[in-house]
Image (cartoon, rainbow, N blue to C red; front, side, top):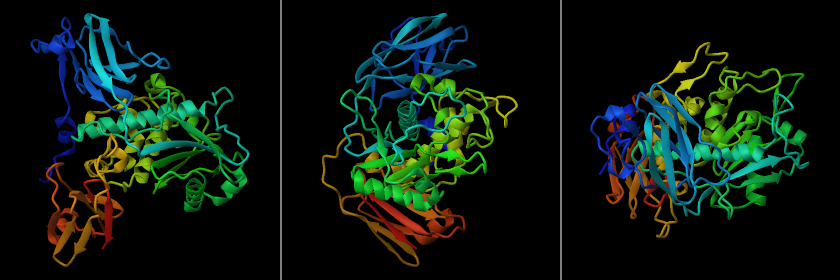
Amino acid sequence: MVTQHFPKFAIRLAFTFIFVLNCNQPAESADHSNDSAKLVVENHEPNSTVRYSVILLRGTLPTQTSDFKIINANAPASAGTTKVVTRDGNFKALVELSPGRNELQLSGTGIASLTFPIHYTPQTNPQYIRLVWMTDKGGDTNFATPTDDVAQNYEARLRTAALLMQSFTAERMHELGYGRRTFRLERDEAGEVIVHTWKGPLSREEYYALGDSNRWWHRVRQWIDQDHTDAAAKNVVLAAYTRKDPTTGRMKGHTALGGANLGLFGSASVFSWPQSISQAAIVFQNETQYDTSKIHDDSVSHSAIWGLASTTIGATLHETGHALGLPHCPDRFGIMSRGFDHFNRFATFQDPRSRRNRNPVDFNRDQEAYFAPESASYLRWSPWMQLDASETASSTRPTIEVNDSTIQVHCESGIGWIGFHAKDQIRAFREFAPGELPTTVTLKRDEIDAELKGIKLQQIRAISSDGVESGKRI
């Protein structure tokens, strides 16, 4: 069965679970009468299970509520106080979970305290995202900062950014009907996300000489493949040695490139990243400006902490998407387009003031960053987006045959997805429901051409039931 496609806003809301909590009853036995006097959790159900450790809790509050807070009685020992962002009777909060049952206490002046249980079961997928802080061969781990009082805790900042990206991915996949599917982060025996600190083989001056080009990316990928081989890993690598030349204003060791098994980034903006999940919403509302003559301003001219953190964490997810196999997309709010500039909107209700915004900017749900359907439909079948280890052997590779009138895709183990590329973007796709995967799909060329709206078809990609992919250039 081919999945039907709907306008973006309809898709993103169609799969949202709304659970109304009576302020005088436990969550499991809510009374839906007189909803205006109730607390509404929109995107989770009580006693549901998630497979990642930081969730976004979103909903609405009774008008008389003040001092609203969320406390996880089973929070990890390292978790800070949950920051709740409210506006016009709506709330968002990033909540840290421990493995097992987590009892979230929702309370505030004007409503009775409520318990909202959520279960966290870690993923078992052997494929994972590996985080790497890359120094030059001298081993200096420090990153560029606008002032000397910025803490050089790169591990905490990179770890926090990765947890935000993981949570964002799960929530957006869920909103498009794929369940809370996301990538696995590498963790130690205590459950802490691992950040590797590795010395590269060259000096910083040698890396600078490679320039902001594919040469640097290829050298880093070669180093990863030779010295840190792991076919199960997609590598997110940040270069500690990124600096701005104070004389010329040029950036040295700065890039954002992704593909194959590597997303490579400069570290010029890491000083703006939150150091913990409890700080994330605070950072995304931080209007503090910085000296752009000293610091690379990669914030689409906002020149404020919130804008810099939003764009660069979002761009890190964008390049990670390339490493997972995603091309660009035409949707302006898609992460695989410039939607990554709006990553902050995942956890907030307003864009704060900045050099670009003289006043705060309101946005609606349809203006938040997300994975566009053409991107999410592909990710659904990626081996790195499966929650658990596969119980079946690798499936057969799809074959693609094209002639003047038809396109035929065949795979004995079943076809999950077919994508059609034009202008380096997925411009049309077909996806099929699990359990009803066809072994052969025949499509008319003129129908695909009509969907591409006059843009020349460049490539066809197909994914099997176990995530084995084939491609054919036209």
